[in-house]
Every structure is written in C-alpha cells, then in structure tokens.
Amino acid sequence: MLYQFQFRTYHRKFKRPLHTSHGIWDMRSGIILKLTDEKGQIGWGEIAPLSWFGSESFDQALDFCTSLPTNISEETIFTISAELPACQFGFESALSNSFSGSASILNEAENSRYSGLLPAGKTALSALQTLWQQGFRTFKWKIGVAAIDEELQVFQQLIEAMDDLGDRAPALLRLDANGGLNYSQAETWLNTGDNLLKNPDLSVIIEFLEQPLPVSQFDKMLSLSAVYKTAIALDESVANLDRIQECYERGWRGIFVIKPAILGSPSQLRKFCEIHPIDAVFSSVFETQIGRQAALNLALELFPNSRALGFGTDDWFDDKYHSILDF
Ligand SMILES: O=C(O)CCC(=O)c1ccccc1C(=O)O
Ligand SMILES: [Mg+2]
Image (cartoon, protein in one colour):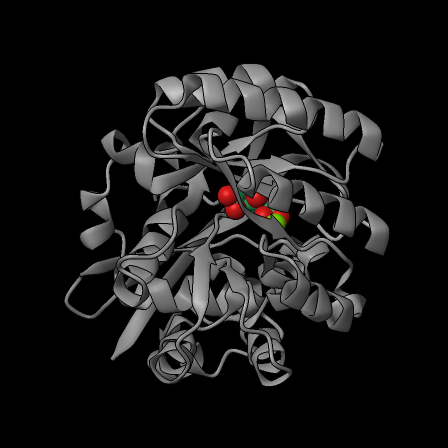
C-alpha cells in the first residue's frame, strides 16, 4: 500500500509562557501529517518535538518531512530512525488513522481522570480554584523554578487550599522539578511529602515527585526511591523508549512518565509493555487534538486503569486549532 504524504507546520503561542527549571517556553511548533491511501482514506498524524527534552528538534523533523517523496510506503514509516522519535510517533499514528477511537469517550466532562497543570509560583493558587471547578482532583505543579524557601511557602498555601476544597477522597498533587533540584532539596521535598502522610486529617496526598535530579543522577534517584514513602517518577530520564528500557534494566521500579508524542514508535512501546509491567503515567507535550487523540488512545489501550492522565493542559491555549485540518 502506498500513501500520498502531505504536511503543514503550525505555531501556537501559549496564553502565558510555561516556566520550568529548563527555562521559559512561549511557543509550541509542530507538524501535521496527512496520509491518503489508494482508496482515498485519510489518516492524520502530528509531530510535536521537544528538543530540550531530548527529542529531535522541529527543524530536524521538518527536514525529514521535506526529504520524503510524495508517495511513501509502510516500510518507510516503520524504518524511521530512533533518532527521530517524534517523527516515529507522528507517522505511525497517521497510519492507524487514530484521530478517532476510544479516547473520544474520555471527554472533558471527565476531568477527574486528568491531571490539571498548574503554573509555577503563586499563580498556581488561583489556577487551582479554576481547575477544581472544572472537576480536576489531580494537579501538577512545577517546582525548581524559584528559590526553594519561596516554593515551600506557596506549597503550604496550595496544600491548605486543596484541603479546604476537598471532599472525601483526597486530592493528589504531583510536584515536577524537571531535574532542577540538588540532592538535599530533593530530600526536603520528599520529607515534606512523607510528613503530609502522617497527618490523617489532611485530604491531600503528594502523588509523586517528578524528575527531582538531572538525568545524569539516576543512581541517586534510585536510592532516594528506596528511602521515602513519597514516590518518585522519572520523566526526562525516560524521554524515549531506549531510555525507558535502560532505566528498567538498571532497576527502576518507580513511576515512568510516558510522553507518547516524543517517546518513539507506538508499536515498539506496545511490545515493551506486553513484557514489562511498569507503573506509568501518561503526559502531554502540548500537542494539538491530533497528537493528543493518538496519545490518549495509546494510554487507554495499554493502561486502561492507570493514574490520572497528564493531559489537563487545554487551558494553556486560547484556540482549539481545528483550522489546521484544512488541507
Ligand atoms: O504531565 C503533565 O501533567 C503536563 C505536561 C507537562 O508537565 C510537560 C509538558 C511539556 C513538556 C514537559 C512537561 C513535563 O512533564 O515536564
Ligand atoms: Mg515532567
């Protein structure tokens, strides 16, 4: 089977820039793919690279798309280099025409199944109120952005606010350091999480501390994960399938953050998950509806009862971006 291949680039500005320990991000750029088979059936896909996270860059992905002929085969798609993981995801999902499927059942009325992304700093406090009204009960907050004393102060306010809003089931808070802590700061946050567990009246739990240390400090994260009750999730350390495999082999049995859009080949992830029962949490990289749908389909297929999906990121854009399908 041959497919006619077309693509368009897009650029979307965030409502407000995303502050992480890696810096400030204000524009999401990506590529929408259209594959038309010999019967005229159309499949959509999305390449949403994140080079500061270890995937190929937007320019590398664009060069790859530009280098392809107008008609491509499945073989072309299944032999895309692992050095282009976002391209592997985009083309494979276009092939399975996954802009449909089970994830559409998960509509916005089910925000309790998603984790809502809070902005860094004290803006998190007002964002919490809005997201809570929308039904979210799991939240992610970026740390390692400002001084730790300042962040611990806002954290206390955040916990109190969540506790005040809370009903019977405890609300969950994910702390994402994006590799920006040192060892003693990581211990401080883990102790803080463990201390909350000792307070039975509090209706808030630190679900996990995400990527506390830089990728180079895997062994330290491994030993921390053996000491504290508060779980640790690896994110930057497991940015693609090779790294997931490597961390698994080196003994990681904590949480793996899976960002399908940059992880690489969905079919290879499927094979890995059939063999290895990992504790996974799925996460967005601010893709449009097309990549989002494909990522959520994969999440629901592989982990139907998993932790809250890290796709509560809609509020970060003004537009819904349907116009991109006009080609
Ligand atoms: O995972 C989530 O809940 C939201 C998505 C998110 O935090 C994120 C989005 C883009 C790039 C990096 C990250 C991250 O998890 O570090
Ligand atoms: Mg993260």
